[in-house]
Length: 102
Ligand SMILES: [Zn+2]
Image (cartoon, rainbow, N blue to C red; front, side):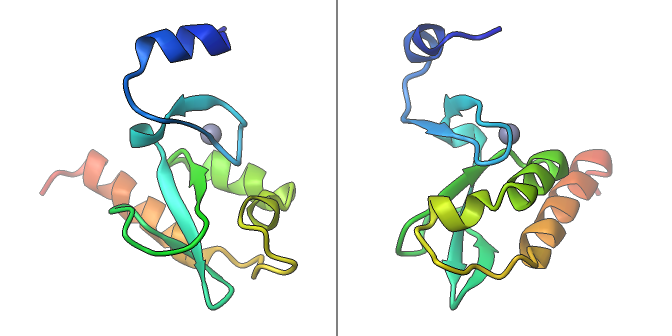
């Protein structure tokens, strides 16, 4: 169990809350997700404008966030496309890379 003060003491970077599991962790360990024309889009380089939602690069957290409609809240959008296929594909690519570095 990690307390809020533990996170603050250990981390040097900004703290963000994963929209899936609600863990508060260093932003550098999370994937930034923005809505581009209403479509959830991964922003691994933190370059896209606008509000971002933060997510562990785990399908579990993506599913949790989708079930709880957390992206719409985090991004202050009345309606965000529930289809998060772009983010899902990004996570799949990331995990394939971790499994097979070639
Ligand atoms: Zn998470």
